Image (tube, rainbow, N blue to C red):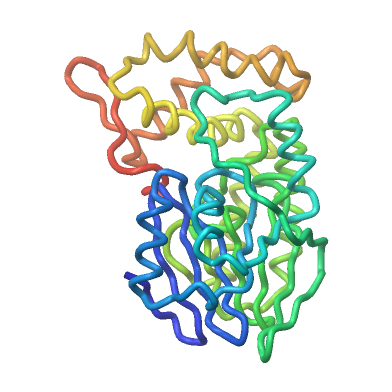
Length: 312
């Protein structure tokens, strides 16, 4: 079922999938298409809502992670006249990820999809009474964009959440990715949006408090890069436990020691070249348990408490 947020904005809320938004207007717009494993299910919800193939002109991807673009091919087969819009930085970023493939054994993979329109920072698109502005918002990924509608509403992908700082881009040194994210937050904080529609979780409007919280947390990450590392590897652990439930801490440590040395070996993480990753992983597991992301049974075996991204 889609939730109606007025102003022609509808939300199909995801957990494993990202949120999927439909904006009704002269030219229908879908923002993100969700996880590849739920593509058919999500598309059927949109069909049941009453969308016909001609009702969508644009499919906009906030960034290239599979839980946001995994339905692109399925959706395009139905909305056959739609044009897929991505950042101009997406294709180089995907080429870099394919070359190094740091975590291909745990990350989900989306089918290859066409990109019909590439957009740059502050590029605009008008559709009837709807003005769409694309804002480059790097930090989570270098190809992240947020979509501004009529200068009132922001669709932020995984860049902006109400309660947490997202994982930063691990295809760069993490402090550099954090620096990009902080610049993004400074740019967005100058706006006066009525509501933000994030890539996971509930829309929110208390932006003053949100940006104050984000500043406190990102400043702590700047002062202590190990906290930033812990924040960044929690989603990787979450992906791992989704694919391989029931592992123990002793089983996890050598595996993630090798995982986390991959970006060090690729010269992406010079900041962490001498880091004790065992200690970092244990801290991340402690945080995930405190956030109710994982549960540990009497035999020390670790399982996800809910779906991927449910804590968001």
